[in-house]
Length: 242
Image 1: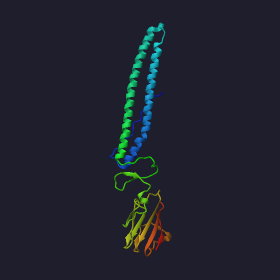
Image 2: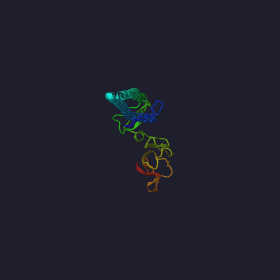
Image 3: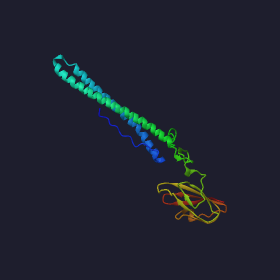
């Protein structure tokens, strides 16, 4: 059996980390613990095998015939010394193993305490759910909803943040010039809905490919415009007007 090795644990999380960094380090740290425990168990088994082999060698040395008493005594002495060294090695290795197990248990407890102190919820039963910051900013929790997809969000300013929402309400009681921030990458897709109340002039961002090359004509009361990101720009059309 080859001499086993022990892989060092990754960096433990710290409450000074940001929520995202803390969660990543905590996941990496906790994920490494099972392997760490397995390696420690293999190290203990290895030490036990070495001690057993040394003891067997000493036993064989003591059962030699009387005709080779001197040689047997020499071998017995050598074997006894080897057994003592192996026993000492086994004792030292067991101490290291016990200490490592204690470190592992302490690290697990510290990780759990840090997770609780940072406001991180338990993982069980939360598969596939996004981790979001609580409204009172007291920590994070798993949610079935992402803010950008909440339909109750609306904006009345002229700069629409696409990283925060995809549905906007724009008051066009007075002329407005609209601009976008958080435009997605070329490899992503997005649909944006803009509900406009009022009939004053709207100046749209340049480069939108409008249906029939016609900039939307606003209705008397309201107009809903739908924009679709196609990687290289926006395609727009009027969904409805009244």
